[in-house]
Length: 372
Ligand code: 3PG
Image (tube, rainbow, N blue to C red):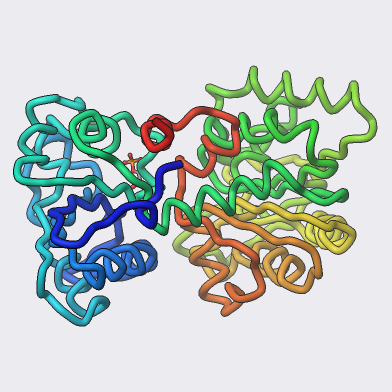
């Protein structure tokens, strides 16, 4: 990979793509982790004499200007994080222009006007072939920023050198993005612990009736194929829920039912909201015996206090493990941070879909251009 440390940036006009896709409410950035991730790169460029034009996107405005997705709150936060507004400027949300996602060469040309170099520091968007990932790279010498280097280095460690006793923990939604990770890491890992909607989907593929629980039916076929792989290889362990907590309502989680999945009767109006005690205990034992752990996706509806017990216990079990510990995905890493456990992990990836595609073994177009 071509890195910013390999070139002179003094007196150069540098276009720097950062990951500005942060949650914003009433004009205030709620979580600045992704912006913080690019601060070392921006400081490096500024301290070495570059003039920096920062670009990034927020949300999915689909080519339209949306007031709530304007870049201003990000700019304010960057002034605070960098401690200066000298020698840098930031352009408006790239996705207000349809040319960004369409990778329109004219839009890319507009962005590179007056620029000497392009620095890619937004790992989380490198799985997209957009103007600000691949388009600009055709027009300017392109280098990886420090955040991209850190992400790629961290994720490569998971792929290249997991210690024996490698456990993958998958939860949350977006089974479509997560099942390929299980398939790609099937040979490397021994234990696969599954919670969240991904677990519901596997259980549904096995014919379990889960009432009103969320299931991603478009991947039931893929889930069945993965189940068959596990049946043919007794060395690989797939741990699915054996019991779950059910509720009728997210808003008023009063009447919770603790059910063994072998006996799910009269659950028509209920949905699964957390792992049960026995499942959580099984997961904690597996985690204890692991030497490398990768976790992406929460075990239950962890944004609701009553439904976060199993995710909490899984997070603590991983944090207490002495091996190598990695996590990715916005919900999971912010949950780890909320519990104050970030320091116990070797690496928290800031990418969502990009991290999953990397671990699925796919080529990320935005990274490919950094190797040319
Ligand atoms: C992310 O949040 O994972 C990145 O910003 C990419 O966003 P996208 O899925 O809208 O392309």
